[in-house]
Length: 400
Image (tube, rainbow, N blue to C red):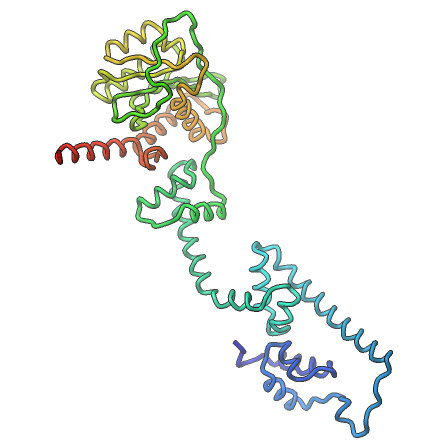
């Protein structure tokens, strides 16, 4: 759109440009400046400007010699090159701001009144149609940027509430549950733009110490870490909690294979059999009864002990054990431990004290059951999944 009002200095420069280019017409100068030819003609008349032109002289001008014509062409080329160099010098300041094409469009928008859209697009190597489309969609673009800024604020809130552990899938599920209609690809794009990411898995040392002389239970799981309903199959394991003093605490867990719920757990400064028995007792208190359930573990000395076998027998639990030295046979428990470590320690190597380790472990384990979204559960927490399963089961029973 052509401007209706121009600054006085712009008018003076436009007339001076016309006077300095004897070979150019008013129309060509106006096109370079992006203004109406009649507007420029009126400015020239008002300024009383004139310039020597061959066809207006009284006497016919002598035709230029080949050398003069060549010199004039060279001078014109030099002026054009100098102008292009100046334009590119100014444009260089725009090129380090992100999207290169958008920066070129912005430069044309900022300098079109002086140099004209056509010339700037030619020098910068962009199509005029693309520039005009970009300029025509500026309103939609501003609206998208505002929407992305609002979404970024909500993403930060969810990421912060997860202690910086949630990545794209869980943040998407959280926002959708809150009524936000958003695509996971857009979540990923906005998270990249604001420098957010979930915590990634890191390898950990193995802690299982097998007792080759102890009695072994059969494998009742067979790497099938699923269950049709809660309180039928469990897996157990031990992981270590490193502390700055050089000591370790140890966490024993009992996880339900149907809902991934942490049914029982125990922390101690040792790895004696009492640790895993305490975790089993905690699971029994949570469920009320474990009668008939399967308890699957590795071949750690604690799990193959007679004391743990007696505890399982008293609870009505059937023992199941993985193959010796095969982490894949107890992969779910291993995966849980790895998730726990990376989301609590994150970039640290250890906790500063035993108290901090216990409190952060307590907080995360309870949050895991009640709030943390699990990808295998449709991005629901374990307890939310169990409640939904109970509701579905009750509805089916009443319908039958």
